[in-house]
Picture: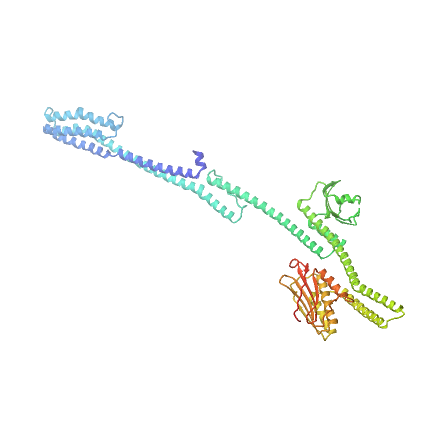
Length: 621
């Protein structure tokens, strides 16, 4: 019971309320009982007082000789004495003083007073009223004593009722005060502390003033719970703050590493890395990755020792330059003496370029993020070296292709022209050795030799112009416009028109060069051989993403067999068209003017790869 009162505010307050109700009920029940017991006290006092008056009346009636009146009054006194006993709170046999006095009055009445009165009234004993009154004086004194006893009993009951009321009032006031005190100490003050602490927690103060509530009741449990929760949340916040700081530092490191990788990748894309610059990147990487001892060994596929050994910090002290091939082929961590060495081969497509090594004291190790950064840096260095080799190989291939193009151009133009001239010289020698030399035939051979030499010289100049040709930032359109301006200055009598609609077509430099040579060759033929006064150049894109290149003139037209002697440019144009996966069509219009037509189709839109087909157009210029 006491434990429950100590451990529960509700039970404690309920107990106080129950005690208050019990005190109030007890007071009411006691008041009711006392009031009920004192109900007949006044009647008993009155009856006892009336006995005294009737005694005086009997003292006056008995001496008169009226026996009936005396008997009637005596019966009335006996009746009233019986009624006094019936309404009393005691029995005649009780040991109370009032019961003793009552028995004394009854005994005096029945044994002495009544027989005396009846004898006087019957005349057997003469006695006057004064004498009788003196004789009744002790009896009347006993009656007065009995009246006083009843009065005392009534007053005692009233005093008891007053005492019960005062005691109940005091008990109720004490219980109310105790309840208010308990509510103030056990409820109001703890609730005030809990409210203030809750407000501070709501504002984020988890390490503020602790609740000093040591009770074992619900509020004490709540206070201890809040203290524990505050401590846990504060510890959690402190741990989270520490973790946020660590994560922030890690993110900063990651940001620095990503920025480093981005700058390295951008630098790699700009051009080849020299050894000195690669050493600077290695040093910067060591700072970013918090690694002090790094080795970067670069090797050729056939070499047994590195041609470049870049060291950051102390490097690998175990490296003695022997068995480099085994070191390069080893991957992952290994314990070597007092050190732990991590190796990351620079390898791509089964081609090994060297190894990146990180040396740590024995017992230490790299975390996963540092190993990932080392692997990424090794991949970047590998990519840089591979790109350098690829670019060098591409330059070698481009140089060989350029030389092959020059050889093909020389073979298709000057070589064939010189062969033709050699044949003409042979004919001239034969004609000269002939005794009957045909002078007209010799003149014809000489004329053809002269034309062949002029053609070879012109082709040589065109080849020189072609080999020096460069397409600037303006692209194909710009160089075509410049070429047309040059033709107009050299041949002001010929109108040359350009219709260019390939601004949205992505052309590679290779395609631009071949298209430019095709247009230049066809335009030159039209200018030098058509004998017309207008040349129209058209470059357009069809709906099926094909490219149409057309050169038309209003001259005399080309011969039916343009590939015959001295027309080596035609075969070169055909070869250029085939290099573009296109088809070249050369024909006359009905009006006699010549036309060059080239149609190129892309395999895929924007791919830069083309295939061609034949086309024809008889529309007059």
